[in-house]
Length: 116
Image (cartoon, rainbow, N blue to C red; front, side, top):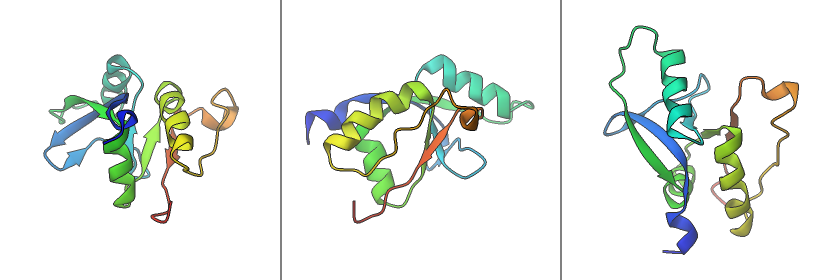
């Protein structure tokens, strides 16, 4: 295991052993801080039906999920951690302008080709 695999990229919220909180495009939300993921949960869970557990999301776990076909939605803070590590491993990644109007929804979704 490479040292980069253990780097914390952000936080995810899990509601069961196999279920994570996702965006409306079925991408696992990775927020840059514990407060940001809590804010996201509060925003989408107005009836408080989720009993979510907050967990650190490490680079190696995210890449493993992507290799299995998973999509991940990063906020600006978490993507700023993910992007350089992903590029270091040879991933073909976009470097979005999070200050652009296009990212008003605050998340940037990434899915890699399994050949990456």
